[in-house]
Amino acid sequence: MAVGNDSSVTEFILLGLTQQPELQLPLFFLFLGIYVVSVMGNLGLIVLIVLNPHLHTPMYYFLFNLSFIDFCYSSVITPRMLVGFVKQNIISHAECLTQLFFFAFSAIDECYILTAMAYDRYAAICKPLLYQVTMSNRVCFLMTVGVYGLGLLEAITHTINMLSLTFCEGNIINHYMCDIPPLLQLSCRSTSINELVVYFVVGFNVTVPSVTIFISYTLILSNILSIHSTGGRSKAFSTCGSHIIALSLFFGAIAFMYFKPSSASMDDDKVSTIFYTIVGPMLNPFIYSIRNKDVHIALRKTLERISFN
Image (cartoon, rainbow, N blue to C red):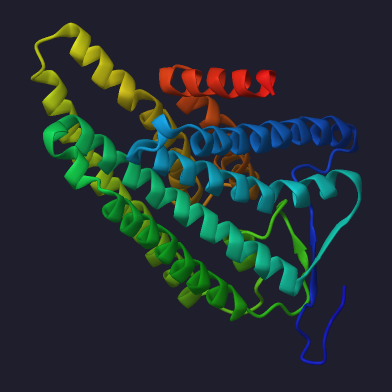
């Protein structure tokens, strides 16, 4: 352990996902595969949206941003996690806080981009005649600026909050990444104010999007139930189905992590974090494209262009 003159820890050891030697190599290849699929899936979806004009709509504009955020998300977490499977994972204090900043930035961005997508679905289903006005290019751009602006502001808040912690002797983080709960546990001084800041910021980021999404989908459901055509109802439900799955995966894991009983172990944190930092970014491209005819058409056209060239 490296200790400065002020007796503060200057580097940490990340224990990783598990301490069982026989699981290290299988887990390395498992998560390496997940990372490769995640990168290829998200970058592939980004390329499809950019290259195909018929996907230049508000829905795919937000999906483009979601894929970009997921790509950044997994790239911030997974490579450092993979290091821990093959050797002792030592990370400096500065690197730890940098990872924490980009992790928080990506998580908060994803939270609000999913909220923007819920509002987009509300506008498309409940106000179809005004959709082009409601979700104009200017409105979409301003919503995106708001998403990234909130992510930046609150990521800075989390980072400064963790920067104020004091680490006297312990430098072993029982996690595979620099996350807020294990850093709070490692502090040798009272963290009551820091915890209050965390609960306020996380509570805000869960409450505001949850209320917005709940209202949007309540209005969507009400509108769908008023549709007399079975085909119309089925089309409306299929439009929202993929988004609901992505929402459940992301917010469910976050709620479990930050609002779990105090008796829960750090291993529970690791499992829940995997779902929204690694598994979620891998699954989202498939969730949004497997049953999406527009994406299928775009993929076919893109492959045809490549084959002709």
